[in-house]
Length: 246
Length: 239
Image (cartoon, rainbow over all chains, first blue to last red; front, side):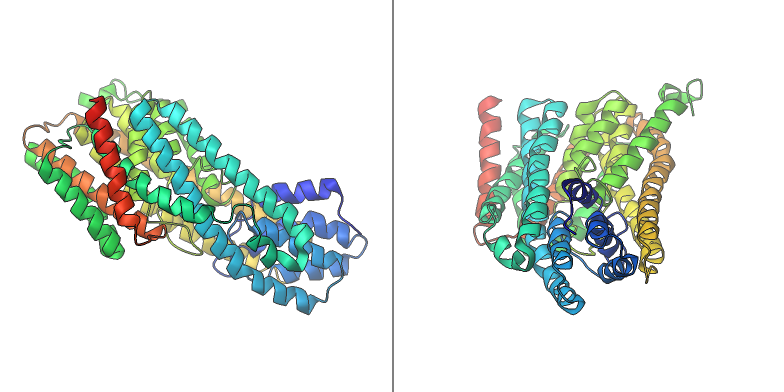
């Protein structure tokens, strides 16, 4: 039986909690199965044995970017509805993991989220209002967030097995490259502007500027070392202030 | 929890049980947002620290703490099962701590940021523990009755909220007291530029890491430099 509009809305809303039971054994599978339930209940209405078999199938380990998981939810439900064999569904499910993870991680975690946050930091430094910057961030980020979840959910149902092609033809393709470029520029601007806003900073002294450039270069070339040194300096800074100032 | 009437600088720390409870509830919501539900990013440092600051009367100081924590966390992306500092409750507590001190000088700021970073990693450890518990809750459902799956999924989310609330409850008041105490210590002279430079070097290091992790291309260092130069020019022009 075909899922109704209310089943789809219910499933879509559950996609927002897809990582609610994330664990190291089955990863996001619990959330995936939970989000599929409204659709599976309709598809297997009156057949509890097949419904439980389908739920068990989708509780097998699975992982993907949480926003693009919505695409797996509907694409897999579509295959369940069209009575594709369980073996094919399982193979397709395994094949979905890598692209839905890689595309989402690059687009959202490395692109969209830092872009919105960096823009908000620049806005705060220039404009001065924390609320304008915070609301700007939340609004901008969530326009992209909800659009991506919605696109993934509705496109997944129409794509079925063709998820790969749907991802290739996605309207946001190409955005990742531009976000990478813009983010590199914005990080530089945000570091300087935050330095300007930090009390007690002699930002325009040449030795401070030189130290910032050298530090950024070390962080870029040796990210592992950069992270450790940054954490150490962060803890050292207040201690230094107390020791030297006391 | 009302410390009014206590001793020394702590007598000025005006935190009622009601405000502490509000912080705990907000901390729980922020912790839940990071991964479980609904991921609208109220858990990001710039939002969480601003809320913390606003609850204690200084949203601007909260945002500055959040901005520094945001830049420091640029290199920590939640790819797959990666371990990264938990930002929501930690930034809330850090922002509230600085605002409660009533002093937005460098000393309290440095301490609030350091506390936010450390609590973030404590939070990460609690998230790892929570995910192990989730494994027992959900992964043990082999032949799953749908209603059991739904119930355990909700249970996992409830545990996540309780975990984040407990983290906030444990650290909120100690951080406020610590930052307040530091705001009363003498921190002048040559120490100020040295300590601020150390903080900024840490931020610049994290910025470099962030550019690399976000997909650094050959032009990324140039773009990073151009962004910094453009901001510096803007500061010079606008005074």
